[in-house]
Length: 278
Image 1 (cartoon, helix red, strand yellow):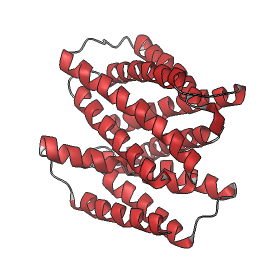
Image 2: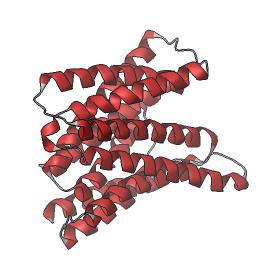
Image 3: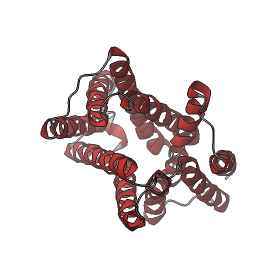
Image 4: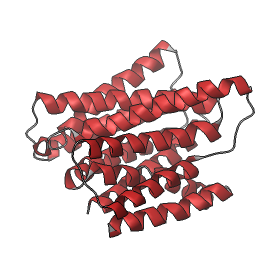
């Protein structure tokens, strides 16, 4: 069940990244992010008040930490993708983000089978290949900076996953509300400080709001998934989100799939089979 939920999380995040990327083609990325977080906050309120949950201060604290880390990760990732080599930033971020929860899960006593662990390694490698994009021409001296940004983004995303996993099973979706209650003000503050215009066409606004809706639904499923199964198995499955982004770009925009991405897609399926078999 947890693996299936992790796959649903990947579908949601991957689809959200796709529509968010469409919105960012004609609107400032920061404006899209703020609109998406506003929608996600509204969704989190609905989730929290429509479900049973008995959260304590610790749950709210970890939820808020997860939200802050996620926004930091997005900021580092977007900056890296905008100014550096996409072929370096995206795959490193994907690998680091999925490896940290695996290491944390095993370090805290989780004991998946050897077959599952091999599947985890395959899935992590697949996520890195799928996330890889064509390089942008930059000065070779900037590669080190790109790696630092990618590792920073991956650490932030991976630690955000751990923070969600640390919330209690009885807390319901209140940690999700705490996360969005922090993420939206941070995104809004960045928008105001940079004086970025939020004006967008109706089409871009709809895409941004859709991205926010998919984001909050995926995060809610992530909470359920980590409570249903091992974090060390859920994380690499959820990290396959780029596979759905690539697939949607191919189906909707007719964008070609690179050879290494095709290899990644195949490896992703192999990894899922191994994890489930284990």
